[in-house]
Amino acid sequence: MLAPALGEAEGDHAEHVMVFAWRMLVAGRARCPVLRDELAAAAGAQAMDVLSALSVFLTTLGNGSRHRLCVGPPRCSHRTTDEQAMLALIAAAQDGDEERVAAHLRWLVVPDQRDAVSRSVQALAELADRASLHIPAPVRQHIQGGRRLEVLDRS
Image (cartoon, rainbow, N blue to C red):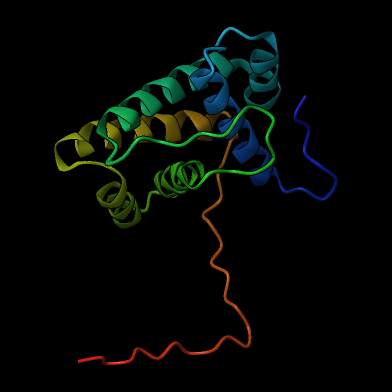
């Protein structure tokens, strides 16, 4: 089981479960007992509903994406940029932050597919919330002691 590591926040575990489920879906292992056990442990009775909503969301996101999405292999501890973007979009939807959702959609999705992706991420966010799978908003990290980059005018 993908149990939270010592000191790991619940939101971190929800992120791990979502990314693991995405990777397993992409690998064609939606019926894998390990995936189903992980979801059941994390989402309880709503596990299969969450998996279905995640599948619909990922399908609409994949169909409307501005580029081919990059997904890591199951059980890899590192996340791809696309996995991070997917988590940030779900977090914005769970927080009810319509401006942040719209910003993510403008960045990730072609214009004619934004409504479909928006509806699917809202449905996933609601189900995940009911299942106590809350994805925290990404934390902005500031580099201390950084230097200002000066742009040279070469004209």
